[in-house]
Image (cartoon, rainbow, N blue to C red; front, side, top):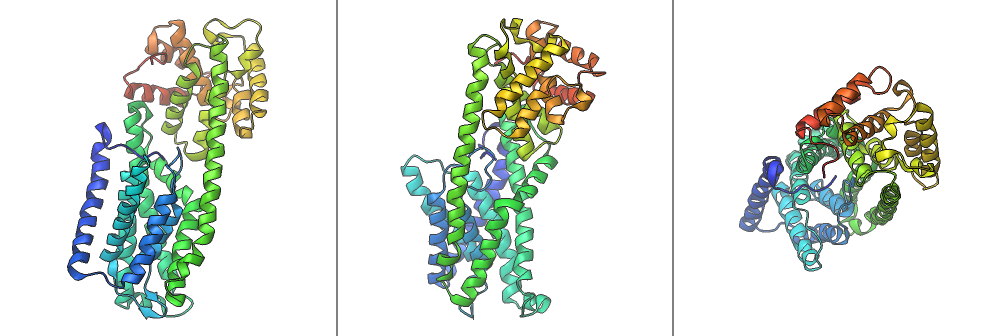
Length: 428
């Protein structure tokens, strides 16, 4: 998920999130200044943990949900902290928010001095999420209500885990809202359904989100028994996870750059019009979102759309305008199979090659991603052939829904184009 920019059409949603976070931060800071800092040693330990996690994070890559897991785990641990070395703490929910806000602000100073981006939207989201966890946990714990509900025994860890589950859901709601605002900033045709984004965020909790949450809970329980030295030991594995995640993200970025370069090979050789692969990938991704694709399935669709014409390099003579949609079925199938063979040698996911090599199959036998790429590619080809502009191209696709194109995909394409004002695919 990219961090949205609070400008243009996304301003209402983003400003609402940032405004709520700013108000909460001001109340928490004012309360802490008036009443003083309770247990400054613990506040310093967790503040340093959050600040260190922010300092070592890198700028979020596309699709990356939490580039600073160490900071997130430290903030959650402080929000779920009830005891320290067997003695009850007294810091309260508002101090948790104040410490996290100050730690994020302090970490932003050296990052800004080094020219690294500060993600205000992500900071606001963390402030609200940690505030939610602290408000759910601290009053119930210190009033004794949590102990009456769960007892003071082996069942008590269910209380912080329950709060963690609710906090994760709150974070997913905010993340989906910000992701939709970021998509709206890219243009009306890229706007995905909010429900699909929310499902994607909830599914993502099974990965790094679970590691962050469990580390936060375990760190809080460790401090309750061993005191403020526990975070140094318990957060070590998460730090190693963060390093591994950074390397994995770098590999993914390199793979995508390789695919984009290979996709341009057909343009440089004169087999396809300039920008064709980029246009098809962008429009196919928007149609995929419209049809509910998220996460890895959307990534496979984007990569396959970039590489869908790579098989044309096997042709002796280029197709006029690169319009493979107008070729005989046998020739389309040969190009698709050759393209799939090339993709398999790039190290891309096998699913990407499967989508590319099934471009010429009847749509009823294709996976959804292949149906989308086939339809969007045909739309771009038809616009280039001058069949009456976008409306004429769409009408031509609707006439082919009996065999060549799935009706639902064509209608989703029409909705995406309508939101974009039926801009011709070849524009831009």
